[in-house]
Length: 551
Image (cartoon, rainbow, N blue to C red; front, side, top):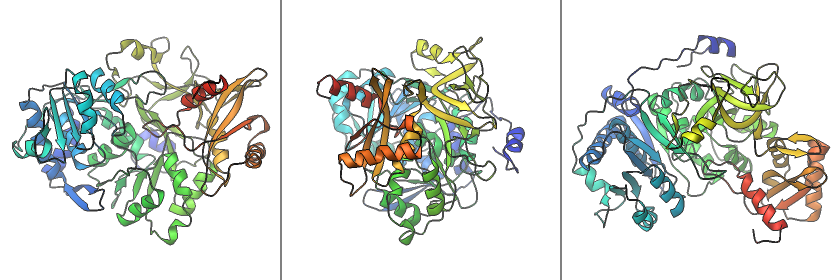
């Protein structure tokens, strides 16, 4: 949808939304390509290393079968279908089938525990669930708590069980002919639950148009994706918006093959091998993955890389990470920004927009983004305020599932025209947007308002630091002191001397008032399913420790 031009302003000015009145994600990403004779859609790398290619025709036939299975079981248009599987063909097939049947897909992360799954499946009153043998025990443990769940289909098993059906058997018995439901672009299509950094997760309900709304935000940081020979992969799970709507569905929309493989535990060396072995040209690599890959010594000595574009989002990238990306991949990693409710609205595109370290770029063409005050009034350049998106954007959610109060609280302004992201930022004189932090993550210390991202980037530039998270903790003199929770790099030994060295590193590299007065060495950092640091958990842990409680 983006037309290449010589500069950002030209691309922005030429862009026009083309959202049809009637639109169905499943037909768009699958059936139209199959009917046109398109080739490979998915390249699946199994846990044992075996590789299988799946065409658009394969996806059409199997999704038609699944749509028939669901409708034969009594599910109707608008019913919710939970999908609890990792990156594999059946995951894509389940989403496509639900969309073609006019149902609402609900992606679920395989590492969720029983309570997390019970909450989400119960909150949306899922009528069906597609899962695999590995996750089945968790579902069986909570089955009695899910009265709305009519159908459970399980992959990787040859026979039906008590209360569930074997997915392969059910598909084999169903017809591969199905007439997709005629859906409007504004009809509900998917519920994606927020990461839940505060309170219970909320279900962000999106319409079919959400995929079209995502396209500019994918094409921009992926350097005018697609191009001839492109092939997309991400380590991000398809259960969250970064994997599903930043990679899988946009790639299939464009007819570009997607490499499907999810590491049980992210292995940076294996990631380099996968990218090289399977000729990956485009990727969404979250900052945490990039930081771990940066720890791999001399990857070019073992891996022949030929990547064309990398996008990253979720945490701010800094100078060191950008320079490392250029030296290893031969390209500039393009940072982008969005959230579950309104994704990919800000980004970089290095070929037409000079990247400024510490900035997440400019509004992606088609999206109106501003920094506003609490009343929803846009602020002048240089002032910190709430990052907000203009209402009416096709990528914006319909609302929170069964939570009109939370939906209403998401908007501000005289006519509720601005959707608040919950993040703080500022815009410079040239229009670049800078992420400051979550509104509850900003640290107030000695009169300064300090965002954690810049300090964390400085910390990870220290050779002994692999990962770092920064929080504000109560201080009777300064309001808050800065605390750094640090995961050390391999070979580094924790010591008081190393703490002092790290503190001095920040003093020297960043600013005296931003150095961490407290440094704690930890084995790992709490992360959301989207790979974002859960600073709230670290703050709660610190509070418990300082009160003498068990964290």
